[in-house]
Image (cartoon, rainbow, N blue to C red; front, side):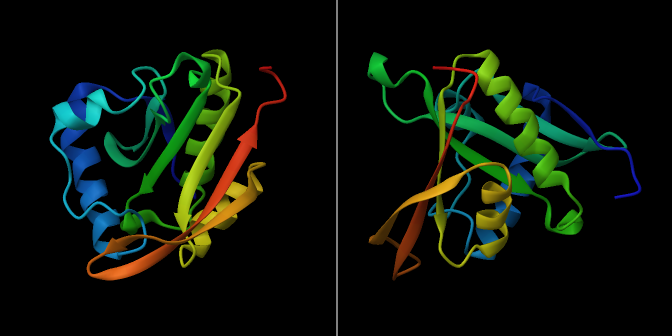
Length: 165
């Protein structure tokens, strides 16, 4: 990338920039079923408190990644759903890879044995990013939900830890 990118823990004060990047992702039409950004309170309660990081370039947040629990049941405590967003201004510069690598490392420190992602089949860049970091396609969900009035399909990808059993 030519510029120094720091990956660090997300702070509550990062929310305005995280929100802005989330809005950019929503606008692409291929990042999420969400059509509006949740409030910070909604977002923070729906994501794991420790596995959330940001990519920072010159004090500006340019990407973020976080894990959401897949279930409240204790037996699934080590399974997390990955959300990753990179600003459209810095796409294709390796920031997603840096974020995902750091998330994998941190998630294993916190006992996660499985990371999973549901990705729109049209989001080729995200599918490639995940597969390059050891995720494998485990399923396809046809017409799982409507997005802006159209039925959408998603691919299910998962990565099993080699360190956490």
